[in-house]
Amino acid sequence: MKKSLLISALLALSLATPSKAAGLRAFMSYTTFCSPDAGPFIETYLSVLGSSVCYIQKDNGKFQASILVTMLFKQNDTIRDFRKYELFSPEVDDTAAINFSFLDQQRVPLPNGKYDLELTIADKNREMKPFEVKDNFELDYPAGVAKISGVQLIESFTKVEKPDVLTKSGYDFIPFLDNYFPAAVNKLTFYAEIYNIGKLLGTDDKFAVAASIESFETGKVVRDNFRLKRETAKPVNVVFSEFDLTNLPSGNYSLVIAARDKENKELMRNTLFFQRSNPALTFNTADIAAVNITNSFVAQYNNVDTLREFIRMTFPISSSGEKLFIRTQLPIASIETMQKYFLAFWQSRNALNPAGEWQKYYLQVLAVNNEFKTPTKQGYESDRGRVYLQYGPPNTRVQEYNEPRTFPYEIWHYYQVGNQSNRRFVFYTREYAANDFEILHSDVYGETYNSRWEIELHKRDTDRNNNPMDLDRTSEPDYYGGRTQDYYDIPR
Image (cartoon, rainbow, N blue to C red; front, side, top):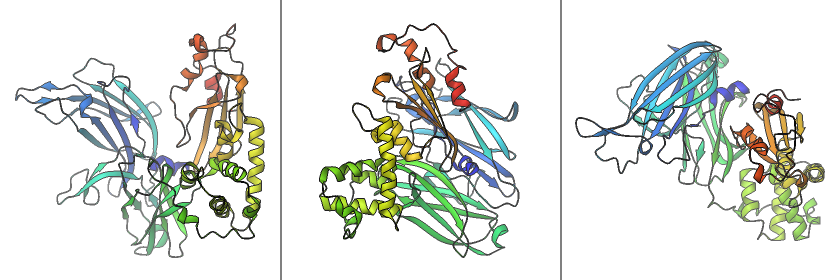
């Protein structure tokens, strides 16, 4: 549900100036919780890269940086909380070899409701324009109602004897501020809280907490990434665990926390999207060695090139592990290995009728190839074709090829993408005749996000030398607030 996503999403906001190595670099994330005593609150985490800020020498001879931070929490035009403070770096003796970041954590109690968060951050010791970031979130923790908190990713933790205001369940946490796990990071540690589960089950009743990593594309649990722990219902039940990511392929995933009753019925869940990069990992063909292809529909596919192409067609709907096979094994796989893989793929989608499932999908691929094929690629290999096969046909599709100041573009709108509501894709092309529309922007998790998509779209007007298209137009729609933003905001 959308509420769960809003509550559980750990949003990494980059405040970096990538074009200037000396510019301020900082990252912010947040998670929402509820205290049995004080009520709902949002917890914000701001990390500043120590080497990106300007240091001033103090009277004691040491050097220190200072960051000016302003946070606004608004409902409509009403300010519910305002914080303006100075964040100091640790003192250092030498500014030539700074290899640390310094962290600020705020806990802001707020009533339930929807909020806009505005963050402004500036280096006090450097004459530069402050950075501003805006986002929105929702606090939805009704008193006495069973809920799961937001999910906090953890970089490290320490057991404490004397808790302070920011301690949770006897631990001090250093948050992991991104939802991207590079190859060098092989642990995913997380913390969450379950509130008032006894209201659903009864006081002191037994239940189970399930934690898992699911493929974002298929919604299926990735092998060996499932935890189940039996608990006794309390006002607050703590979920604190970790997964080993060593053998998790590169791709998009959901970290899922769910509560289940004694009959194993799922009562509620919360999810957190994350991405993994693990380029050195290869597909283990032993996973499909036991697949029996005798008398199956794949036995008829004896041509290596045909079967290889059929497997490539499945890429848009493949899980991360399946994409790993296509990338690393498909070029060298034997005909038998490909047959076993292809059968296992469709059995996992429809165990009773894998052949029928493949035929249904194949007809979709043929339609996509017909509409989205380009001079250099099949339709299923194009961005529009891949999105169509992965998410289905859009609920609305704007096709605008003749706006005077923009490259030809399309805006696809989906009412629902998995657990996400009201999502969009913006495609564009610089050469309409080629029919190759690339993804310029999307707000779907794991897809290309580009806050400057309108600027890029309007470069037809501002970058004439690189534009092969006819620019002799007379009408002038507004750059902002014109048709592009209108189509995006109000799909039709």
